[in-house]
Each structure stands twice: as structure tokens, then as C-alpha cells.
Length: 165
Image (tube, rainbow, N blue to C red):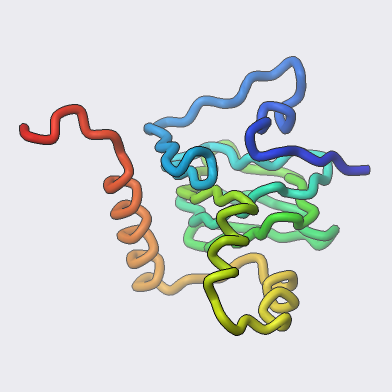
């Protein structure tokens, strides 16, 4: 059994009696819901029951660990590993540690389609590869570069109260 959820209605993922968990730092919502940035998040928008994701998740686990089921294959993600989930993948959370934190981008199906439409020749093998490869173990240098890029995008999109101060 699985549920289908739209990107705008993430509250369904947390059940009727629960509210969406708070996040330690600011959340930036540029691009009218097509692209969101979360930093220091103690959760990812994936429920305990299998769901076809309506959005993609690209994130770096910074603390703790989380165990996900992706197409019924168990994935154990620990600090320093990069998670890549595309829209439409069947995903559920099995368990997560109390100290789990992740910095991640949430990207809508529309934005991914628009991006892929701009690539003239993309092989179907790309999607077959991505369906089997959900996470990447990064070296210290790669982890630092991803974190720097993430902070650059996060700082770029953060609202500025007074541009001239």
C-alpha cells in the first residue's frame, strides 16, 4: 500500500494528528514552490508508509543516520553520505536516529522536467542508473565542496532585510 502526495501538501506525510516538524534554521522557499532549501533539518519529507515522491530530494546527511526503503530495498544513510531521490520513486522511512540532521534541496517534478528538457541528448540509461543508485559515499573533499555549494545557494536565496546596510 502506498499514498500519492502533491508537493504543496506535505502535511499529509505526517498524519492528521501531527504537525509538520520544526526545523532548527530558516527555510528558504524561492521559485514558487518548485525549489526549497532546508538546512539542519531533523527530518526529511518521507513517511513511514511507502509513498511515490512527488518531488526530488538531494541532501547530505550531516549527523546521525537514517534507514530508508527505496523500491523495497533497504538503504542505510550515515553522516557524510549524499542522498539522491528522484520524483516518482517509492520511498519510506524505516528508522532514524535521534541526532539525525540533513541539509537538502527539495525539487519539484516540474523543475526537473524543465531542466531535463534543456538537455538535448539524455540517455534512458541515466534514469535506469539513477533508479539503482540512491546514495553516494563522499570523500572529505567532496563533502566540503557540496557543503560549500549548499551554503552558497542557501545564502543567495535567503531574504535580505536591508540591502544597503
